[in-house]
Amino acid sequence: MKITRFDKSVAGESLLNSVICADVLEVLPQIEAETFDMVFADPPYNLQLKNELYRPNLTKVDAVNDAWDQFSDFAAYDAFTEAWLAEVKRVMKPSATLWVIGTYHNIFRVGKVLQDLGFWVLNDVVWVKANPMPNFRGVRFTNATETLIWAVKDKSVKDYTFNYELMKEFNDGKQMRSDWYFPLCRGEERLTEDGKKVHSTQKPLALLERIVLASSKEGDLILDPFAGTGTTAHAAMKHHRSFCMIEVDEHYVQWMLRRLGDVPLTLPVATGDGVKREDARDGSSPQE
Amino acid sequence: MKITRFDKSVAGESLLNSVICADVLEVLPQIEAETFDMVFADPPYNLQLKNELYRPNLTKVDAVNDAWDQFSDFAAYDAFTEAWLAEVKRVMKPSATLWVIGTYHNIFRVGKVLQDLGFWVLNDVVWVKANPMPNFRGVRFTNATETLIWAVKDKSVKDYTFNYELMKEFNDGKQMRSDWYFPLCRGEERLTEDGKKVHSTQKPLALLERIVLASSKEGDLILDPFAGTGTTAHAAMKHHRSFCMIEVDEHYVQWMLRRLGDVPLTLPVATGDGVKREDARDGSSPQE
DNA sequence: GTGTAGTTTGAATCCTACG
DNA sequence: GCGTAGGATTCAAACTACA
Image (cartoon, chains in turn blue, red, orange, brown):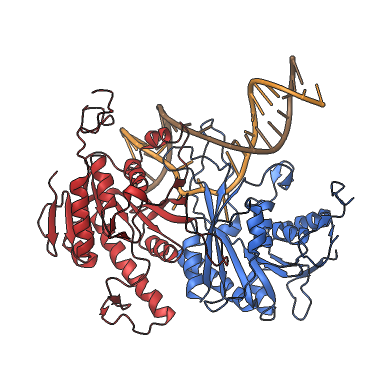
């Protein structure tokens, strides 16, 4: 698969399977309206960490303290949120859907802005973590979930993609619910460099796979405006969707390109049904 | 237990175990600052309060079928939310905590307003429904959760009540997480009249019991500004807390009073430890 | 190779009393 | 208000070391 990298300027270019290293608010205005079939966004959460946190055994928690998560106040965060959401709305096709993930630090603000912009919420999906970080001090409940908002551009949109039957298959033949159980991204899947996390908030691939499979079709073009190390692109490639990844951090972009180059190519072995596909490099396929 | 009913006016009265039949925005301003130890609120999800709509400036609109564009509708809801939350904050004791429950229709707006008022979120707790209503048309995921926000008045509050060890006991000796599993309110527990639900969104008693037991102490005074048929008061009585219920609907108030009169009286059998209590009418108590 | 015990760590708005 | 010292505090899964 050919992946095209852009820096800053993309006007007039094809964005099929592209990785763009630039600020989201610089790039999105260059993109033609109604370009994407689906959008997944994992924006900064605006965590307001103040003091260092130690575990009971006195080791220090490696908390999220990245520059990209710093905002001066709620007003600044809201303004940023409104800016990128408005641009995202513009580049969504009329029947496209939007996913945004967040925690209580930011999701209420994101949801409010999104509703004000006219987006129509279809579901709030809860990612229930199998293995969340405990609350060391015992002063709150274990923070065990993150929230996803799934929305269309406005209330009138009825022809969005929802692969109801496939979701049903994934849930033992019963209608898929809005509470999803996945472990945190760890082990082989987690990108590390010198034993340290490449990205502090890498999402589990399984989560993105479910999102891609639920709300897009093969061949669709998927946008991720905060791509990080490219989990969304990974899931898109794996399931025969095209992607456009925007990420401002050069280091993350390099890792994303390396990662996507390593993703096994999956090729269709059956056409027409749109469902049955096998990994061409996977010897476990019963057809082989 | 003696329960006092008020209509409209409560100024100067004791609110211990009271049921007030009046609009929340009329009553709260009459109440002294820093009165309550804990607040649970299940606000309306839209502005159709007893056939009365609020304009963004909080004046009432009499006709239910007035044309409202989406923005003015949201603005009105936000204004109403800010009004009652600001009053609730005023009547909360300095170390009190607030619980608000909602769905994606309103919880983002409530959370945003609450943060803007200076409330400091402790957790977002997800009520995962064991038996949610399916999505009949198969166009979305089954809406299987509701969201609770737990907050203190401001960031500096550290001495709020959190019965950590008791919660741990309820979770097999492990720290209680923020995802709570309860079935919908049905069967014996559900109040019905001529085979129909008395209240369309009666909450499960078990949910309110966990909230009361987690975040209040015996003898505490608990406020519910949208009391409905009084599940919060029921849970409070059962666990030796006092209550103040505000409900504008006369029909709900009558049901609440009848219901609370039927709740078995629970009496302390041990004093001093503050934990061991038995139902005085419950023959299963090992002490008896 | 297997099994077991010990170690590490994850989007976190994580304490209290006293001077 | 702030700084500092004292002291109580964690769950699940993946990984490492070693028998």
